[in-house]
Structures are given as C-alpha cells and as structure tokens.
Image (cartoon, rainbow, N blue to C red; front, side, top):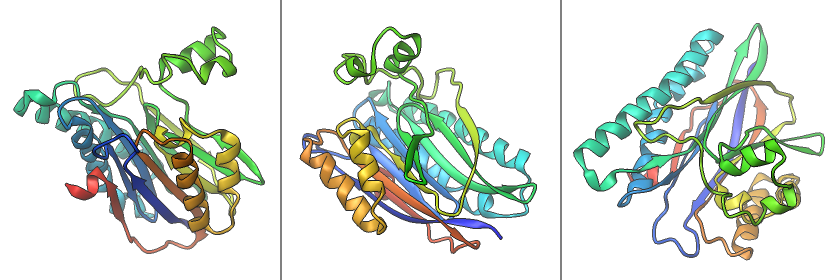
Length: 263
C-alpha cells in the first residue's frame, strides 16, 4: 500500500517585515518551502516562481506509474525550469536583478515496492524528521557557516551568533551554477516531517522544535512552533509545514501559501 502526506501549514509575515518573501506548497505527495531574497519585491517573486513551477509537478509525482529514475529527473529538471524563469523575469525588469530563492521539497514515491521520500534541497530552508522520539535534520544548509562548521573552524556554540550565519553558498538565482541535493530516504508509518524557512529554526532552538513536533495533534504542533518563533522576536517571515504519513494514496488537496498564494 502507498503512503501520502497529511499536512498542516502556515506562512506568516515576520515582526519587522512589510511583506512575506516565503512561499510554500502542500499536497498529498509533495510539500515544499521557498524563501526568497533580493531585488525590489524580488524575494516574493522568486519564491513564488519556484513554488508554482514545482507545484505543477504534483499530479505527475502522485502517479504510481512513474518510475524512480524519471521521478528523480522530474525533480532535478524542475530546478532548471525555475532558474530559466527567474532569469527571464529579471531580464524584463532590471529592478529585480539579484533576486533568488531557496527551495526545500519533500516528495513521496515508491521504488521496488517500497515507500520512499525524496528530498530536493538548495539553500538554507530545512527539512526535519521526527521518528521514535528522535529529531533528525535531513537537509544540510548551503551556507558559509555550514562550511565553517564542517571544517571545524567554528563550534556549534559560536555558530549561533556568527556574523556569516545567513550567507548562502547556493540559491536559485537564474544565472548561477548550482549543485542541488537530491537524497532518498526510507519512510516509516509514524514518521512526521517538518519543512520550514529560517524564520523558524533561526530563532528557536532544536529543543523547542522537537517539543513542538511531539504534540500528537498537528494543529497544536504548528501553533506551538509559530508562537515560539514570535516569542523569540520573529523578525523574519515564518513558514512551517508539518506532515504525517498516512496509509493510502490520499486526495490531491493541494494549496499554495505565502507569496505564491498572491500570484
């Protein structure tokens, strides 16, 4: 039997933001968050482009007839389409020069009869999994700070206040070379996933994220995490998607959030 997502989601404007540069998509087999940046209103446009193009794949990705190789190709090729559309948009409006977006997307599929999840990731939005009371960060930030951490140049304690914590090494900007991550994970019946922008994890601890994810009721979990971000000051936009695995193929009740909702 296949699996699908049961999702709750919210995208809100941060306390010092005048607009929401985050976009998100929720569907039965695909969830995604994009965090835009740069240009005159460019962040909103770039993240909406990414989410709208990816969201168009949802009906295809939901099909059990698609083979695993084609599944990977569709996800990776979507990034080329996003980059091309961002490039076209900038060329028609020079004020948008420098705009770009992160993208973290989680998709369910079957391979050799086994249920799997594919994580498509570029930038510093994040994906977590809660399994058997253990919270695991599945994505790896494409940031200068992450590279410094990998090199051992800074400690995790120093990282929290590091001046380069938000400097991206990769993003979808329409012209840059990208090396996206596409990783495949096994899924278990009681897995719970979180996909979020840095407006959440950048201002609350992993301990708080885990506490929120442990609420049995997804709506309470979502409210807890959003409230925690605002209690911490929430200067940036906060986008949170919480998804539980459910048995069966599910209904394709897809939705757009944030800047993508207004497009």
